[in-house]
Image (cartoon, rainbow, N blue to C red; front, side, top):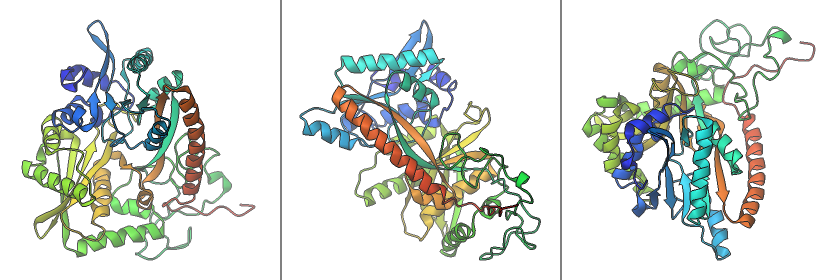
Length: 451
């Protein structure tokens, strides 16, 4: 189909709700808003070719497929591949892409009622690409089910890194008492330690069993210094879990914003007033123009979201003496939708921000600290901070792997890209190993020989 507006919204959303990792960005209302607003249409290089498989009157599988004549707005970079094609006199564009325009959020992409239908959908898309004589197909930020289907069809796997925050206190033992004052860092396990300062385990048996806390970013999840633990009670509880340097840095950044006279308010769903949306749009556009780029998303897009899925959005507004000066917008996974954590698991997604005035550390406050504080208060399990940004790790957003899958029609180029991806994946592994030693969380020291 050449437009998501031609698709039955109820059928699409019902299929999405059955997936392993549905997100607000794969809902019909979001994809329709991208199209109706002129943000993701053929004129902007995103020509919709949505694919649907029907079994009688039942929608068995579907995916958002686009024909692309450029590689912008994808966040999985293949410019070098396009250049290599051009150097050999071959056309890389148009190419096919399964994904959500301008949205690097991992989640389900091949919507299907079962694994067989998902496989049939991907096979049909590949057949369509061959019939159209396209150079390639790219499935971006898919989930495990998507990757399984891609592996079965021989697509090439590519890995990248994002940084996500988990509402999960480290499982190190805590000593009674109170949080040490700013700048203090009592020795671990000694009298006078903070209320949540980790204490030295009393015996080797108190250490987690082997394999209970996998290394950062490796298969099986887990992060050095952050095992499976309870949710944070509040932002101070979260700060108490961090090492002294990171805790001090966050406090300093938040103090700078407060001392500048900045106060925040937030609103969700229908509580976001039309004038709030208008102010946010001004901020969003200003940020793009200041970086020399035209905004990807039009004002009509955001206004459509306010109408079609208001419950999915939380807006934070920074004010100085009652005048708004900056804002950030996050999305929230609907409680009622099944997620990888089961029913009722909340996930928040950092998406957009902008400011009309410059204030030191305002970006960190608006984009990380306010959303994290809100997430703790509202029982959100995870906050995904968006693409790239190693600086996020200092704010306890930890690295996770994201994956895409790629098919190239030209055998020689497919072989070359496959060899490149092997080297690139080795580089990702080394990068994660490097980050493994930089956990922002407090950790108990290793036991001396003999216990």
